[in-house]
Image (cartoon, rainbow, N blue to C red):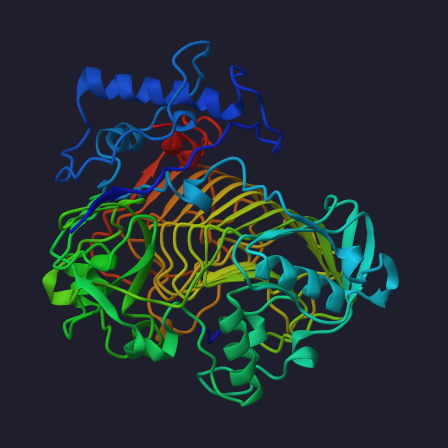
Length: 602
């Protein structure tokens, strides 16, 4: 099965937030929450390290984090009962060296504004009804909603409110300005009823790899969050039958200006040294770019290095090599002389042979979100594999520090998408209805995102033999993304080739009945530091869940005992994978139960 996808001293303010319980309700200060309880597991593990030393030699220590984390991120010191369970050796090691562990990535800063609990609230509120939107289920409300969103954007930000009821939309709803939020009255009260597909509204979006495939099978949404200029160029390119410019620099990479070269640094460092700081400002988003060299040492590094990646045939993986340079968006926190402090630690080494530099990029969409609504598409049969019409849900593209909260999609081809999106949070999202191709997709170099409290419901219509179901997809060198506290009643952990790396799935219940995609030219299924932690596998299928014999430098901790059946893969790399398996057959016994929450608490 194949699928083509493709010199001043200043400081920015840090983020903060408050705690909330696992169901999304917020708790007042002083109340012990589920996240607070996890702090006890951290304390237990840290104590074990102090008493007995690390279980294995730690890698070189990285530069410390820039000052203390915000108060809600620190473990509570009093009022905690110790949580029973088994602390794996891997966790004890990680506590000792959280930014440089060889198998487990540091994802404690994943999500919008470092994973804060509360999203921004704008004082300016615009009622969509004042712009002509009617919740009668028959009048096309899309023009009015889009006028309200544009007005909020022109005003510098604001919230467009949708009251309870059903709003018919015959066009794409576009959030194209920063600090603009579309907010319904709740996913069980406000509905957008979409009557037309992206193929009807925009045109045929073909694949850059040729053939008759529809790129609406993995791109675009009927609610689309992307910078306005990005939207305009996408639509123009699709209608001209040319491949659109999807990412932070995309197929026009040479047009983006270098801000400064960067000196060598190690993975896990929170600072870099630059040649010229004059164009850098605290709080600004910059793009760290790393080019591969002819020997493909950058790709080997992403795979963990060593004999296996060195022996791998990279040159014919044309789709994979199209994803480099690796582009990592990050905000600067402090600029002092030539030292720049970042809001997250470096995801990879920075080596001179990769021509490291900070560059300009597409102006990002930031501070925007969609909340409290259901997007329901008119129910149509699911199309054959790779021929989706584009009844797609919510997509974030070239977005940073944006979010989706309490949103459900029904009868969609593809549910929620991250396309060259980073540091975004999808919280309390749900995919329901007749069945979808990709319930969640994460591609084109999307990094540091958080998907938590998510649900994929069982399909209401049996799938046709010529359709395909994936699950929580990640591909295209996407890294340091987290899927946490999930209820997957169908699908799989779809690592869709394109060598995603350093991604985490944790505290998830899965009926593992989907299949992964990705064709051979996209290269390996996994790079280094993929981690599956506390996964309950309802049907005991191993595929894409137990990864100690597939993923290099990976960790599989606290999963059910599983067996191989249906789609069975072989490792992409030869020799010792340096993968770890612990507490096999003991989901929910592992402590901490949730790897992301425990990292946040460190």
